[in-house]
Image (cartoon, rainbow, N blue to C red):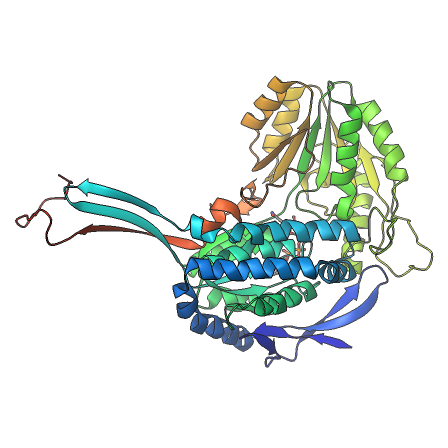
Amino acid sequence: MKTIEHFVGGKSFSGDSKKTSKVFNPATGEQSAEVKLASTKDVNQAVANAKKAFEDWANKPPLQRARIMFKFKELIEKNSDELTKIIVSEHGKVYEDAKGSLTRGLEVVEYACGIPQMLKGEFTENVGSSVDSWSIRQPLGVCAGITPFNFPAMVPMWMFPMAIACGNTFVLKPSEKDPSCSMRLAELLKDAGLPDGVFNIVNGDKEAVDALISNKDVVAMSFVGSTPIAKYIYENCAKNEKRVQALGGAKNHCVVMPDCDLDQAVNGLMGAAYGSAGERCMAQSVAVAVGGIGDKLVESLAKKVEALKVGPGMDKLSEMGPLVTKEHLAKVKGYVDIGEKEGAKLIVDGRNFKLQGYENGYYIGGCLFDHVKKDMRIYKEEIFGPVLSVVRAKDFDEALQLVNDHEFGNGVSIFTRDGDTGRTFSNKAKIGMVGINIPIPVPMAFHSFGGWKRSLFGDQHMHGPEGVRFYTKLKTITSRWPTGLRTDPEFVMPTMK
Ligand code: NAD
């Protein structure tokens, strides 16, 4: 059985811990590897390596750091087929979707290639007579990232290219369910010329996470995962005096207005609800049918959900792959049971889906509920599977109220032909990322990604300009040369003359 180790100081690192966790291929249900789970000592060793590498790396000119990012970009492109297959083999999503997610990560690397421009700072000549002032952004030190299973390439790449390009060193703790893609990315970074110790990986579970939280040399923490863990990370990192951004779960709504292009809305919803088997933080799990459009919407959706092609991620015909683990499959099926008991109308039931030759894979067919009410658990909680709930709303105001009252605030969309409705909605929605006739409004790398309410704890979103702010500290220098204006001692608050 293959063992997945850690990556520390530019090479594979076994560590002390004997604890391991099993990694499975969700398409077949077979175990493909075991992954080491780091002890506190192992984590501290990784952080010590990152700390040692920091000073040299922080002093490297941003242009040289950018050149390594350019090389890394080339290597990702060259190895994209291999990286994509790794994602499919441990996560289960279909090949083209996995490739798309890798591309979205690659775009952050491309953005990071422009780091010299982003670190230029600001300068004012003569803030006072012969006094100049300028602001610069300096790296923080050792930064850490903890990532979820659902985007094993993209989410780590929201973090480390930005952190490293800004001059920090980094310790990543990927999901123990699909750690191999991060390990391969670490090798590619080394091949790109990244000095040893700048990027490190510790595989592990809660023990490794807690070791990163309590290690005083880790100065900033980026987290993406479920809301309860995001809150735990936020609170405990703050207690340990770290800068922190912690992105949590979601329940993204899609508001379907009566004037919309129904085909466009239905196709958008199909991809957004069932793509990646609903295991996306930007998946749409609630469709709000406004006015009289509900019956037509449900009818069109039902036909397409029944026709969904579910199969292994490497099969070109598959539109939706399996779920990530046996436990997650049981949880998602459990939610469908709950929805039925709560009185929602189950229009399409995917629970008994079976695939010949893949009987042990973690498959479920698409599920569709109608007449879901806002007090039901299937409406309130994140299911993270291919289960779409249709809620009926009498008008736009009621739909907007539903969106704004929900505990999560990651993404939302509206389908309408009316510009005024779209504009009012984007203005009033208490949500971080809004789409108008766009089903999954994931911002590009040169904008920033993040939700509101209990979908993000902290005040900076990820990558883009917010990423630069998160991974740097602002310093403002005010200076006068001796030949400038001479003054007597001043004992009052300086105001520039
Ligand atoms: P998770 O919260 O179970 O795990 C995320 C990370 O936290 C993993 O690395 C895991 O090892 C670690 N972890 C798990 N339990 C822990 C504990 N008790 N203490 C400390 N660390 C712990 O999430 P997941 O199941 O891997 O991923 C799915 C979740 O991530 C969903 O809720 C999804 O919405 C969310 N997500 C959010 C975004 C976003 O941008 N907001 C993006 C992707 C995924």
